[in-house]
Image 1 (cartoon, rainbow, N blue to C red):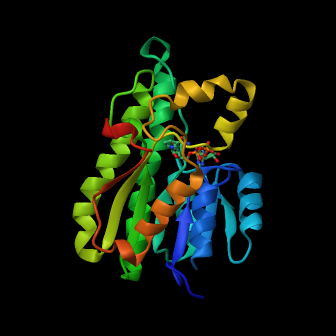
Image 2 (spheres, rainbow, N blue to C red):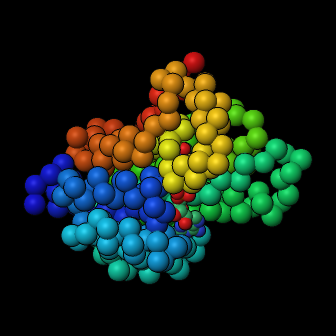
Image 3 (tube, rainbow, N blue to C red):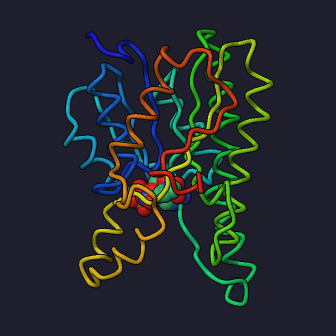
Length: 248
Ligand SMILES: NC(=O)c1ccc[n+]([C@@H]2O[C@H](COP(=O)([O-])OP(=O)(O)OC[C@H]3O[C@@H](n4cnc5c(N)ncnc54)[C@H](O)[C@@H]3O)[C@@H](O)[C@H]2O)c1
């Protein structure tokens, strides 16, 4: 098999939603020769996404907030070269509507899962000794202040800095840890929302210098680059893919 990540084994979490970022990443990595393991809490969804990609792609049930589930999943995949911590939820509420339970769930799914995944992923990569690439899917909300997203922002900023500090611990073993910060990307969930109120598109894209929402492939291409040996000297970095949103 030839390709930019030929011979590598990748695990992508949160890859069960149709038209989501995880599916696009898995497809792109598979196209470039990786063996891909898609995981998600939605078992049927992730199995369907893996079947649609075909080849050696496999889907596994995986709750990223469970330490035991990480052990089980990595037990099935064996040694991995690429880990993409992509699973996430968005609790988008102003602070007066943010009870402790919702805050805690936001941090558990987006941030604690990243800790569990990075800990397990580093142990896996150190054991096989070939190094690896860990990619944390953060957000522009993990870089700048956006109203109404406090808990989401904290979870994504936490993921960003956890990874940056970890990159310093693992650099000598060639385990690279980077974050990707998508801006507004047209995934399945947003498509459904916009079908009901297309005028929202104008409102949502008004602040984007390039004037439109990105497609999942923009994020998938960045993940592919970071996963490949082309990015071998890049670690602890924050890769922004946002049509210029945070450059203003
Ligand atoms: N779409 C965007 O505009 C955008 C922008 C910035 C960041 N992001 C981030 O990118 C990632 C993917 O976003 P998306 O738009 O594809 O969303 P999505 O909702 O389509 O996909 C998220 C996936 O995570 C899964 N998931 C949720 N909780 C889980 C758990 N406990 N264990 C395992 N899987 C779980 C869901 O089932 C879903 O399949 C998320 O982390 C999101 O915060 C997205």
